[in-house]
Length: 462
Image (cartoon, rainbow, N blue to C red; front, top):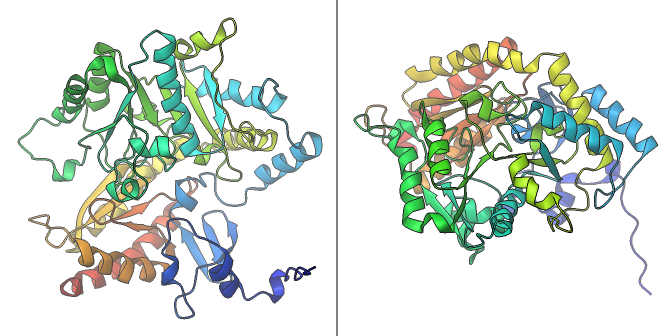
């Protein structure tokens, strides 16, 4: 019989070699890492900052991945987890309940807009979207209208990578390698106002949703799913009146409106929910990420009483669920996290500091490569262009050289973690923890200005 080798201690490990050999990083080109190109290894966090295994300090300008909203390593959240683990470490919410899940569901319902009083817990964002799409289909089937199964989303939008959520995701490169997908995903133009013709009514973008519903047949369309501010493509903000028009269209054709707030909920836009920022009432909100400030995985699908009603009678049930949904420890951390938002006034802080954050980014417009600055709350982006006047973009190898060949590494080398991305046109995205303040904005500026200036000077190289 072969004897297993003892597991090496962290102290004795060659962390780089072990990571390359055994750790499969998500959305990462594993072939790009070698002895010359190391995997960044983050070992510690505090507030708005993280440190790597070499002791270098970085401003986490992405809040992990739009999710560490209350800041890294808040002792209140660690204490909540510890206390709960000593009392009740785990209990499912399949035919049982436990106090923290009940308390958290009640708290979320009290914060959610309108009659969104039913909370279905999940383990993360894609699961929340998957749950919303399944509920939409199942609801219409329960109403005797099972043909309503299609979902309309926007081009370039990201809604998750499970096969159901991927059918709503509007990114060709993410979809193609996993096709065929769950049928029924349809797409319409997004709200990239930077590239929208000045002489066209911006609400035609909302009308495009109605055109697609009519084209598909309203009797076949279950839901429209939209982010308050679209992430992929670089923080696309809706034009005034957009969501009000979409709500009218959905009501007119008996279609549900899902507000995908996996990023935009829990203070990112200065409100508990992004729908509040833009003044519309969805039928379902999907959330995750900052519900626990990412201290432990958790998500929630929040739906209206109307949608839950058919499942609350007789022998009916929503035959869907996840083992770890509503986990007692996650529920306790989420409650403590929401208490931090309220106690420390983090939503008000975002509202008060948004103009300063935005002004810092706007001050970079004199750099030739900066084309657009857009976003809302602590969720902002800079679009990069070859020519400010013509808005000529970088494509293919040019974008690759700009983003991955220079910007990503140089920003990180100078101590700033943010997102240089080309799902759509090249952008740099920023979503610092909600506790970020003047010192963090000034640091961002002091890194961005020289790096973007150098990128401008190198444009002929890309």
